[in-house]
Length: 248
Image (cartoon, rainbow, N blue to C red; front, side):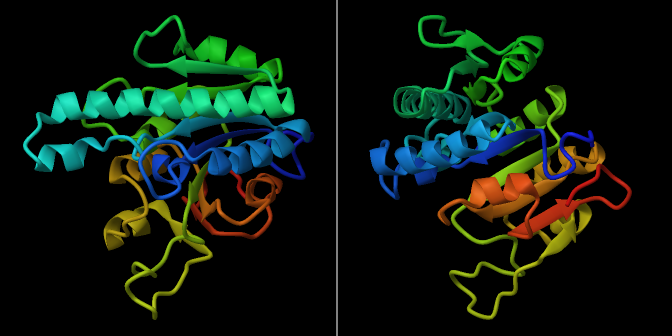
């Protein structure tokens, strides 16, 4: 880690679940997006380069549509389009309310609303102090936006994946079901996979494990948690591999 970032991270990948953008319903909840944009703006103004991947679960979830008889590939493409709507909502709040220059890049071409995903261009935007928001998932069916966040983080040189959830971290069991579930402060990628902990897509964790990319799972709903995560404060659960990239 560079000397400049000795107090925290310099370039981060923030993964946001689409369900949270809907406030528990279908569509976009402006109050939620406004709150998220405010947190991202605070981090950006501190000098940290921020890239964002957003899910589309508040509109469509391919695996659920498949269970109702829809072709999985088509259902996944519908979900990818939903992620772009979330990206545009976040872009609007960041630019209009906080004056932050942003770029939306998508894996599926839609040139009237977003750039195509080009890694070197994304990195250049970050260097120019723009927030880059990735939409459209990986552009391929059967791949989750969690996996997209891991892949994009690796390709554009992020130091950590900040996985924002509606829970405080990684637990031994679902805390909403098991009141005795315990939260981990630290855990390895391999242990998450071997225990079958349902935190995120297994492919995303496997990709991060193979490439020594740390993941911090934390609660987005706590005000200021994105900034705390970027500063390296002890919140949530840090998922890492011994001997991998330095993390706090």
